[in-house]
Length: 248
Image (tube, rainbow, N blue to C red):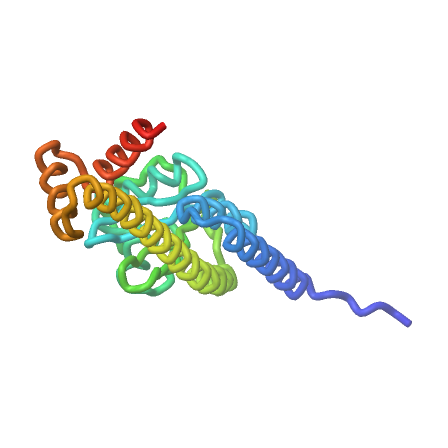
């Protein structure tokens, strides 16, 4: 029985889907293992460059209080392209971040749509741009940006795959942010409990030594911390240590 020839277009599609699926699997592992958001975003950039054919470099732009900045990138040239957009106040990464619409443009269209940016980016060697919106809750919005040295570096399929990737990345990054916040709150609570314990210990010593009630003992500690310009917890720790050393 004769083999049915494989359509190269279909084969290419399957290959790209496999690459993106693998990248998403890797991203999931990173989100499980790492909690530093800058590290995660750097990994996102490297993975998406490997997964999207034609992508030579990548970056992540974040708008905070309306001001753009690059928080992750694969190389200095990507930063230069980003800075050219920030300086001109226009370009695909800013357009994607502001409108939340994927931007897929070749260099000729860049000259028509964003002439100031086109002039600023001249000589950087980028011929195609692909930027997808990236939203982290309501506090941050930005874009995941791909830059290609080829004139037709990105196709509609690449834009669709990048949207798929950013959707998964957004969900993972939101979960990572919530985890970081929860752990920070837990650390703060633990610190507060530790502070409370050492302050109560110091207060008990003052009550025993000066034969005063709890409120008076606490006020004495507060007054001393203000006179010595020390945090109450630091004063309490030093006070308890001094008493322990005297008893020893």
